[in-house]
Image (cartoon, rainbow, N blue to C red; front, side, top):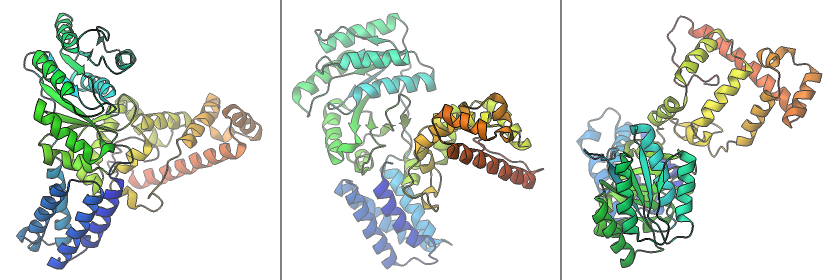
Length: 448
């Protein structure tokens, strides 16, 4: 998870304050010293750290904390608010043109993930804003860049405009915009060339593309793994192009997160989207308040609910709610629920959004073995319809057949059957206790 080591350090520091009935200046000094070290280790710009810690110190020994009934919690609230402000305060949405098409220019160094981000962003905006996008392949220098964009476009069923790698990129963009207007595409995303470092040739070409395309948004794509260098790159691009936003890629990697915390402060440019994986739907709007909550171990319930709403079929969810109430769900239903949860993204990421999940016994550093889930699915799929509906009929010869068909052992089949039986028993007890009470399970999962 992004910010993992920073999150651990800050959560440990906040834990010491949480229960305090009184917070002294010495407590605040100790807390801010630890916060300063944690941020510097996370590769946050030292000037940003200095002003951030100063603001916390001033507020933490001020009236809002001293007059609070729970000073310890009030200090944590101050840290959360300042962390949110540091990353931009609130989500910054795409600025759509009043008269279509909206033009988004993507720039950045080579290897930052521009081409993939262009396709992901086209996919995201098409889904969320009902737009009809066109991708323009204006990177004629990197081998296979055009082919990569065309492959991603085919995969997503999004058209890609290209004139090959022998035509000037400025001309490609000009013709591409004409084509978009002819075909009534109301969103244009321009994938431009990158270099291994910032140079005048790259910047001049981008300035010419900007002049011919009149973009509504200019997004810089930066790799979070490059840390402080990402902030320096953003500063250089911003000076020449006037950036309107940043897309930060690889935020799901083993990164210290300093770039995400510094970039807004140093450049004044908001992070608009973050890449959280390889899949084409692994691009998310950046919510500074939610990220601050996650860093401080408070979870991100809103994002979790949004993921559930985007992937769970409402009609099927209502059916499942009914089955849960009568405890009549089958192994087939269980299989379907596993599929719906997996559609929401990697299970480790979902757990990271749950408040305090990392503090639960056995959850810290927990590695979820996706192969085990594959195994469960294979076992259930090897059963007959009758067996899925009534697991009690599964005798030793049936278990042998199921194990053989799923490439597992009889012990694995027994384990699944026992877990399913225990789960139904638990649900029966739970439903008995809540009968007559209004109960809401936002994800409608048999294991929630």
